[in-house]
Length: 542
Image 1 (cartoon, helix red, strand yellow):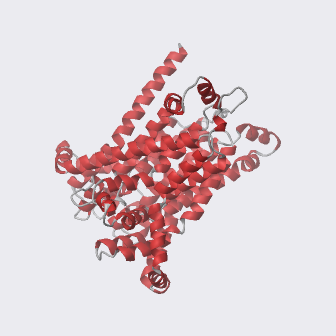
Image 2 (cartoon, rainbow, N blue to C red):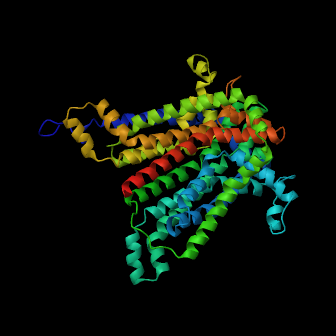
Image 3 (cartoon, rainbow, N blue to C red):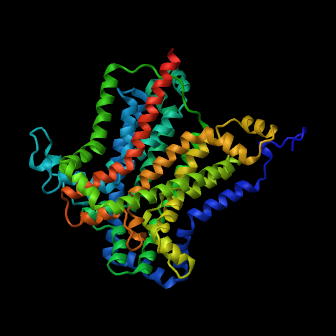
């Protein structure tokens, strides 16, 4: 309470941020804690699994192969993403905004769909092998796709946006005025390394570690390319033998790489938070730089996105294939749309309430809340699905939820809460505190402040979060293939099931329908936003 009797924004009860953190932990962590509790309650099974991993050549080979694929994928993703980030941030290529949007888009496209496209190009009967022009290198046409190297190639193309975003964040928070001042007294290369080198290296390492963490738990692409890796073995324990307990204990090693990855990402975020977004205009790059940067970005976008999706579109060929796919999979389309809509709405609403509770919290509490949410997002979906099975598959009310489509919403809510929390929290902490204090001085209640001050200022961020969560959940496979109840199959599960019976025109058409279902709302929103920006720009010029 201030001297004039007005309750300021900084005098709110300190238990509210702690309650918000407890809510995040209650939503994001129970599935993983149930796995750990199951392992701790059965030491014999844990010891047997450890003995199998260390003594059986087959399991040790699967772990080694998964690690090699993840490492190769990280190298390839970094090779594609890090230079693209530098070009987009420093060389101003032609059509930079369009190229940036297309370069980030592969992160929202399911990996198995891009893998289908590359099968149509480099597969045994692929178009490139059958009709390769003379100028295409033999190394590309002879690439063994159904090998660990082929899996790493596809996964690297899918995950290169992680490296791109990490390095872009480092470059955008670099003090450009300090760079210019250092270049006056030292050689430009030495000055650039002294100012930009450290955060850029940290970002490159963080992005590569994130790619490795994602690829270690990837199941769909190795299964599609018939490459047996450790996550495929875990799924085989469930689907072929029904051994949920064995698969649960076998999945625990996938948690080990998560701790250093999350720590490095949070440390990188803390480093970037101390800097401010650079608004100092860079000197105009030379024309040859812009041309070379445009060519590089176009090449990356072509390899990572346009080439595989274009191949799927070419395989579909006729509109009647799309119509037949829609009629065939109408129930799955309905289920996927309803599940994704419910998940996105519930996650964004919960994330908004948590953001309002954490807005004025100390930085350490905010960092802890983000760490809890990131844990659920970065750990493999297989772990999340197994944890939900161990936690909810029991008699009583838990069994009622487990046997209904609501279990998918619960699982998606816990995993994608970070997408609704972290961007909103970053945006909310930039709102001037004087707005809330002025609202309280005029007698507005907390509810009116949340709905009348915070929500209007954050609605664009909330809309983007809703679209991202919708696009990710509508094509989610690792969780849905484990938790979808009988008689309820999502479109991703239906597509992945048909893939093992052969890749034909119908499968390609279903993949395009799934792409349109996930990317359609996002593309429409971006077009509306671009038109709105152009109208505002024209009005400002007048």
